[in-house]
Image (cartoon, rainbow, N blue to C red; front, side, top):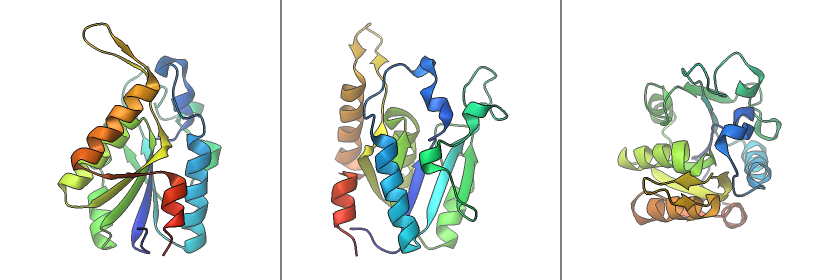
Length: 185
């Protein structure tokens, strides 16, 4: 259930995610669903964090200083909203995310963003390991396809579903944006 102490964490939703290098992704409505969540959090005056990937790889589309590094328009932070930059796949590593959450006495994290199998998964797992109650919003995340070490290509929807199933097993509650917003306090 959403409480007034639940924070919305939007992970890596920057123009860089549209770079061809990522390939085909699932959930083309993810940004719309993120925008719906963001609107609700803003309307309720609840806390929001935007995680921004600041790559240190010279060829990354997430490299700071280029237009692709900007947040996508649908989820662009407003003045006063917290933005935390990260250079790894984990929102907690070498950032002040944990300190911020502790200072605000926030225990319930609602996460969405890209990619499901990368930064969303890694950040959600770490949050659960640190004792936070984590909800990942299934239709407000997106994955891309993956080729495994045997050469098998897993479609984006399969990667998304399996990642969410693994998170649900031990780390997070998985809910749709519609179901989550119906549970309003």
